[in-house]
Image 1 (cartoon, rainbow, N blue to C red):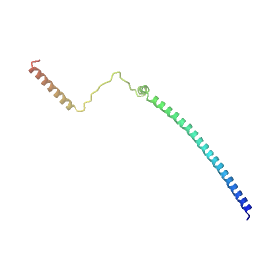
Image 2 (image 1 turned 135 degrees about the vertical axis):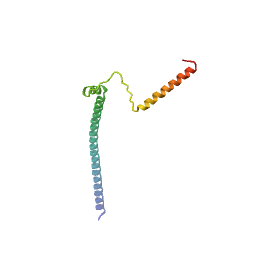
Image 3 (image 1 turned 180 degrees about the vertical axis):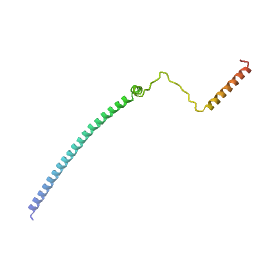
Image 4 (image 1 turned 180 degrees about the horizontal axis):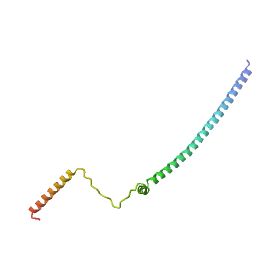
Length: 125
């Protein structure tokens, strides 16, 4: 082959390679932009979903606070269950073992007797 034909083939090959590289770079750039657009769409959808969930959370917290309201609970207890609140608290003592109570009373009485005897000895009536 002549030198001119080799140069033409080489030039043609280089031009095709450059054109192929340019087409590849452009297609890669378009593919990247397309993927970024898809990701941005997903981000926007997720932000909308997040905002919906946050507003739902706020609504549920408000509902919980409304249901926990002591006035509402008292009203339901009075209306539906017939429970009433006393203005004065009632104190009660529960005796499980009466023998212990008797022992405590006797011990207290002995101490009182000892105290009065000591006072009499000291000259105090």
